[in-house]
Amino acid sequence: MTIDYSLYLVTGRDLLPEGMTYLDSLEESLRGGVTIVQIREKKADTLEFFEIARQSKTLCDKYKVPLVINDRVDIALAVQADGVHLGQTDMPVHVARTLLPPNAIIGVSCNNLDHLKKAVEDRVDYIGIGAVWITNTKELTNPVIGVRGVGSFLSALDGTDVKAVAIGGIKSDNFLRTLHGSVSPSGHRLDGVAVVSEIVASRDPYRSARTLREAYTSWSAQLANQEKAWSAPMYTTDSVKAGVIGLIRAIRDHNPLVHQITNVVVTNQSANVTLALGASPIMATAPEEMEDLSRVLGALLINFGTVTDKEGMVPAGKYANRESKPVVFDPVGVGATQFRRRTAAHLLDNWQASVIKGNAAELSALAKSEEVQAKGVDSVGSGFVDPAKFVKELALRERCVIALTGPTDWVSDGVTVIKLDNGHKLLGNITGSGCMVGTCIATFCAGAWTQASIEDSFGKLVRGDMLLGAVGGILVLTIAAEIAASRPEVRGSGTFFSALMDELYNLTPDTVLERAKVQVF
Ligand code: 3NM
Ligand code: MG
Image (cartoon, rainbow, N blue to C red; front, side, top):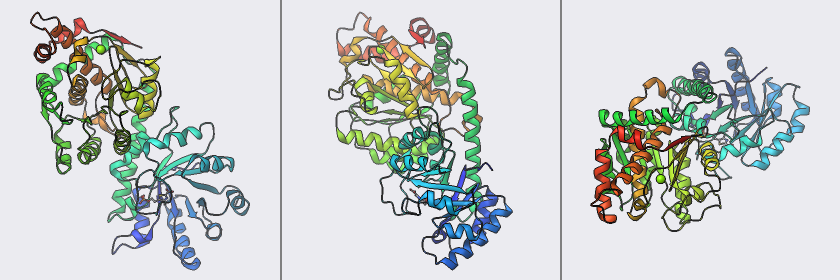
């Protein structure tokens, strides 16, 4: 029998809401679409555990859903359950195997790669990878893995037929983030997601289960579409240029709101850049307003150049993900301090960026590569031996578009790599030109968002072509810089700055088409 692990319910009777019986909750969850059930009883005596398991088995049989028992091989045998789930301090797998019928399912909880390696050697059927998020349901003795940590577990399962589910703190509002982010560089994905409180503590377990199941189904469907699309070449130089022109028009036609949580050095100029491109800026930072803003914004920019607004940055990104809005992350000077490195990891563990933009030193630090060293928060040039390979790999790792800026800019979504060769050295003489690129990218991603249809967002964390958004944002700023620098009145960085703003404001699609130096790989 092939087991469907996609929506794995783990029971927890302590979490039932008042007035809800255990069996009613379980039946509603089964009706709602859970695909496998684990009975987890940490406090029950043997008789009580047996009774619960026996009644659960009858219900699961009615819905043809497999049942596994946490820890207790004897109870599994007594109620003829489909298998057991074993923790690291439970009975050894090879012993359980000799006691259980030949086809019994055996699953093991893994918190680290040593656990995983042992589980693979023991030929378990599946592993639970956890905890992926913070949870109150189980006292955690090990550090939280984080969505971005799941990929290394999945890599270690390459070439085996061991299935994997993620567990710990998974809720409807981080469900897609969990599925989208949990993937190895080779493309190995989760087989399912396990939850306790999201369903068990719900007053409407039917609806809660159904919501997750539907989200899983649309995620799988869009993934299949995307993989099909990736197998054919998507972009050419001409299609990229035409796409960018389309975005310039979309921004001016729709005037999207670009919400920016940015640093104190550049707030004013970033707001002005947004206006010059034809969109509207809002520079709100209070956590209390992030949910409301997520509904109206066209894109969110998070730039942590002066990391003081982290309290707002976390919810802002989560709500933007929930609304399928673009999230552009500019981890300014991330390599400069431990604090910045930790903050970037914390933010990226909480939400899915759509585009991460940085110079060589920043992206190198983010990728934990030693290739490029940081010098304060300033750009130090391209610095990578093979920038195309670097951006492509980081895009696959972070599950988003990567934009590496410098004298030459490199952009990748993990499949296509685009090289951009516009710009002027005077950009290096004004403060915040990198931050302005971030703002331009966010504005173009907002334009891309306005172009995408609602249907396009089912099962996705972001709607719109983020690769084009990143390319468009870089092109307009670098092309405006070239034109500004050539103006006769420009004699230094001060006159250059005001000329740059003017040229951004006056930039026409034709000029972009004429001047853009784009190469697609
Ligand atoms: N095992 P919730 S975390 C049962 O890390 C369990 O192995 C975990 O509950 C592990 O969905 C966990 O309510 C609790 O956060 C998951
Ligand atoms: Mg350049």
